[in-house]
Length: 200
Ligand code: GRF
Image 1 (spheres, rainbow, N blue to C red):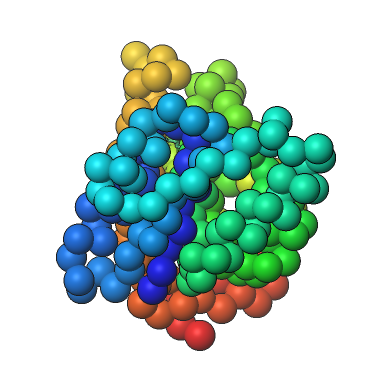
Image 2: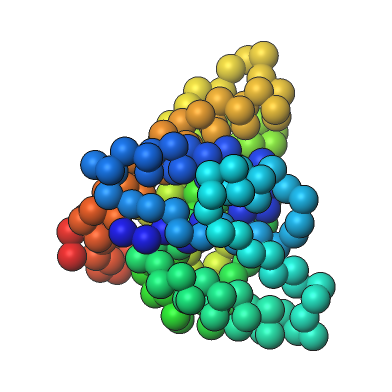
């Protein structure tokens, strides 16, 4: 299966996928990596792995819709079976979701539907929950509202700050992402209401 991965930052989730794809039994290959900004470690990781990259910045377009349309066409040219948003800090639009229906997945560093948005680890810490984690879901038009493919749970320790908690979440998140994207690549998924199962 062909994976396109979109990143905005460090790209440790991307790296976990690149590493997994080295095993032919994994059944997937990262065919392109895209970003909404230049000069990030995620793009450097792709380049080191010999994977083609592209950048589409919102600010270079006359409207958000135009950006989304161009991003959609660019990703579509790589004919992905799964599009992974791996720390991609932009909401993709209607064109994108229409073109890749049930093929776009994202991870969120909290247990959805708790603590959606950009500060999941901080919000969990602030609220005082004793467990949190990461959620892999099929992207829809909302913020972290898509149907859930998998979740991983991590404890919140008394001594945690946002950084230590997010780091613990990211370890679990990467493992969950690799395992479930691999299964999606090999078996496909079917979505009925809010229920997801592997197999087509
Ligand atoms: C991950 O925790 C992701 O869920 C969140 O940002 C982090 C990205 O990490 N949205 P990386 O760029 O893959 O290292």
